[in-house]
Image (cartoon, rainbow, N blue to C red; front, side, top):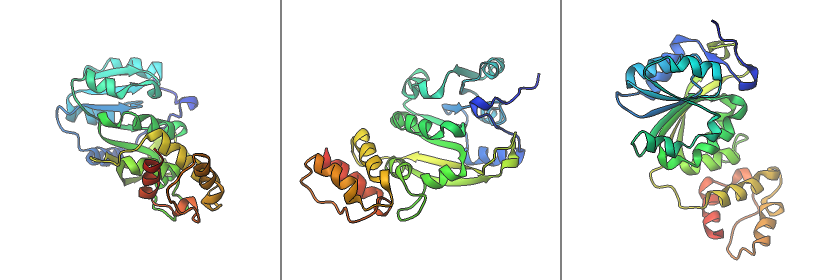
Amino acid sequence: MKHIPRKRFGQHFLSDQGIIDAIVRAIAPAPGQPMVEIGPGLAALTQPLVERLGHLTVVELDRDLAQRLRAHGQLDVIESDVLKVDFTAVAARLGVAKVRVVGNLPYNISTPILFHLLEHVQAIEDQHFMLQKEVIDRMVAAPATAAYGRLSVMLQWRYAMEDVLFVPPESFDPPPRVDSAVVRMVPRAEPAAVQPALLEELVQVAFSQRRKLLRHTLGRWLEARQFAGTFDTQRRAEEVPVADYVALAQACS
C-alpha cells in the first residue's frame, strides 16, 4: 500500500535515482561500518546503504514506516523521535566507539537535531545530511556575511563542514518549496576546550541584535559577569570570527 506523506512529520521522500547515487558516493559506505540513518522513510537511501554496509541502524518516528522497515532483515529499527535518541548509547550497543550518522532530516526540526547531535559528538565519526540549502549556507558561512550567525559559530567550533551536493525540489515526492543540499560534517580531532552551554549563551546574546554593535548586547552581558579581560565590542556579531567567540568563552570560564 502506498504511504501518504505526513505533513506533521515534514515528510518529503527522495525519489531521484541520480541524486541518491551521488549521495551514496559522497557518504562512501564500506562493509561493516557502524552507521545510523535518521528518517529512512521509504528506504530510498537506506537500501543502497545497507547493500554496501551489510547492516544499518535506522531511526524512524512514523509507526507505519517503522513497521515496514522491520520486515527488512538487515535493519535495526529504533522507533523514536530522534531528539530522544542517545547516540552515545547506540554506539555502545553496537560495540563501537563511534558511529557514522546520515539522513534526510525533517526540515522543520533540523536545527534542534543538529544541536542534539552536538551533545553526542564524541561518539560520532562523521555526519552526512540532506537539509534545506539555506540552513547549510548558514552552517558553512564565513564571518562578515549575511548567513553567518549562531549556527555557524556553534557548529564550526566543533566540525569541519562542506556543502557537497545541491538537490533541487523535483528530486522529492512531494517536492518541498525550498532548495536542498547535502552537507558533510567531520568532528574536529582537537577542538578548543570550552563549556558548550557557556559558548551557546554567549553567542546567543551576541546575535540577539545582530545589527547593533556588541557593546549594546555582549558588552552588557560581560559587565554583568564582571569580566576583567579584553574583548572588542565595537564590532557587530557577524564580524567576529569563530575563534574569537571560543577564546572569549574560555576566558569567561
